[in-house]
Image 1: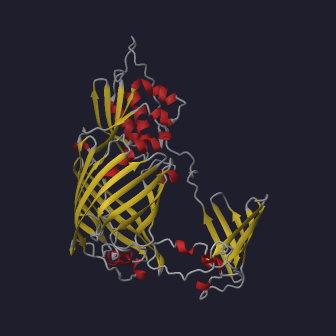
Image 2: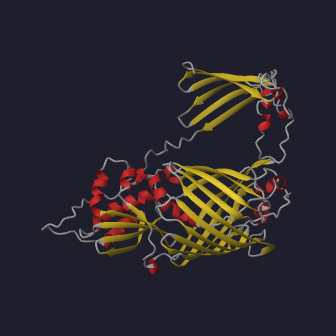
Image 3: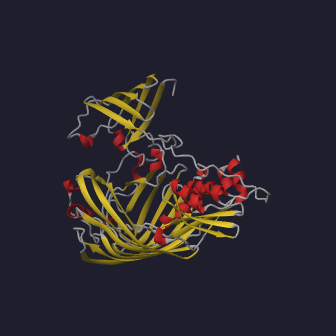
Length: 553
């Protein structure tokens, strides 16, 4: 970059050497660089190392000049002649020119003249995860902290006010499902249905408790509860509150003064809880990368109903109805040589509208302070009905987790009513979870998949301090690449965007974007609701520390 002028240049091979090419400049190293083999992509999914830097080469490059802080002119020389696109693209010149106007830091417009034959208009929307649209947030400030002396005096002692404690927590979006005073310790069991980062709910509960608990309470334990499970317990000495709140130490250092551990017993008055809940909300399903229809989608509505028999025991169902979409526009019969456990999913979209997406009985339990269990039975997901069992060992203050899951399912009828097909399968996986530092976490699942194949899935996720997550996965099984079909093996990447980042208000809603090149039958697992690790992880130590800056937010 030279002032307002920016230059770029490169050397292309293969397709990027289809115009203005010359002999490979690397041929002096080896004669193998002189020629490029005819490309054979096969089933795809493989890296073709043998084609790197082989065959003829060509230069490409460009320059841009900023006339004004918001207006930039660009010129480009392209070494791609677009041979494969000749049927609908007329390549007359290697030169492209254009103008770009930056409307604001997130939005820009462009106009271009391409290859001497095409005019183009473009619009670009840029999202910066480090710059939330609403700054640090629009939520109300937490309850002011109440200083605590910890010593007796002749003045009137403050007494515990549990009624106001519950009411203020409720206004703050936190439900106190149980409060137990044990000597000088107060245990407050909180159901957090408002704040995505549990550390924010932790800080707000501690501040509120400091105002409404009596002077005889020396320690406070905040125990997070979800779906009838006590996920974690964070204990702090009452006398440390004011020092923690006023401290200039980093949030991580402040959290080090809390004892984060496990708690088994849930003490709550279930009869006073809401046993029936329901909601109606929109949904959007999509499919990418089909060669005949690169993007397909459907916008619709879904109705969900849940009845809780007791704490941790419930039955819930969901009905979906598509309203607008093009999933029917390009149905192609599956050519899979494996049992069609996923590749005929379009048939469910075609014949199961409206349809029963799920109707499941679920029992969640915690047999020991660090062990969780789940039993599910019914119509587990759109394509399968049956039974599923899972056990997870995950101490709240440790990075390692171990789990095992066993399922026996039958494939559902395409109309998404109550019938099932003849295909039945028993699947199961042993899982290892590890929460690394710097926001990285990994998961390894090994076992038997829906098509009867055996193998393992590895996934790696990076979670940032603002709640954004991105990651990827791949699955390798004993199915040969040739039998798997297009793509050779299952793989994909994903990005998760928290709603509170965009709206600036507390919310546990997230938007997950999955980018999967193609869905085949090898390496396919059940798409179960309420897998245990997804429930417990947000309230455990690694997640608490990841967004430590929200402790007093």
